Amino acid sequence: MISDPGFYLAAVPAVILLGLAKGGFAGLAIIAMSILSLAINPVRAAAIVLPILLVQDAVSLWAYRRSYDRQALGVLLPGACAGIVIGAATAAYVSEASVRVVIGSIAVLFAGNYFLGFANRLARSSFATGRHAGWFWGAVSGFTSLVSHAGGPPYQVWMLSRRLDRDMMVGTTTWYFALVNLIKMPFFLGLGQLDRQALMTALVLAPLAIVSTMAGIWLVRRIPVERFYGIIYALLLLVGLKLSFDGLSAMLR
Image (cartoon, rainbow, N blue to C red):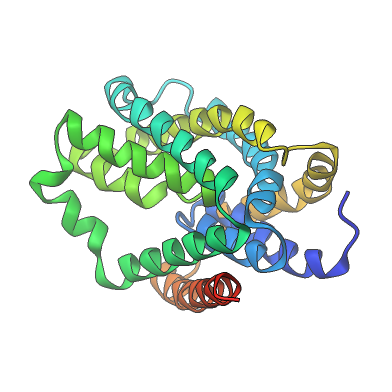
């Protein structure tokens, strides 16, 4: 288990945000990973978070075990697998500083997406419909999911165009990311990041994730969501810029 107190100063708020994301505040996983990446190797951070996500997925799958769009999964998952392979190659063959720049750039793009609505505009365009578009956005989702557990916005670009009802949309999302997270497991093992220390650290943090997931379910029905997201995504923009700056500074030394 990681014993550095500085790690937990970043890990505790990150895991709380991760739990809130699973509880209904979609899109917060990227800021959780960005905060963790300020404290430790970004790939190591993703490996520690993965077992926590799998536990949360198991709970969610039971609730939506019969509600999912089989055709959508059949289109998205092959692309996601390709994106995961590319993400794993990126993590294996580039420097830690480069990975920080990648995650920082993703964070800045996702913050820009929130404030400027790129994903919603794309979802209404011809670039977000059809099987080939599904493969492409699945690949982008798989890549961002591998490097920072942030596959949601690319996934949504294609899925929003299908105009599913609420339960089918939530259920398909639950199944998609549960399967993507399972597919990522051997890649993190191959990268040497999902070791005993990572698993023990995840075990220590898991109860906090479960409690914050329950808190998210409760809070999402009681607070002004748009104001909350505005604050969170402004913070995400700052954290993304900081990660990018740190990464570029290290690369230029």
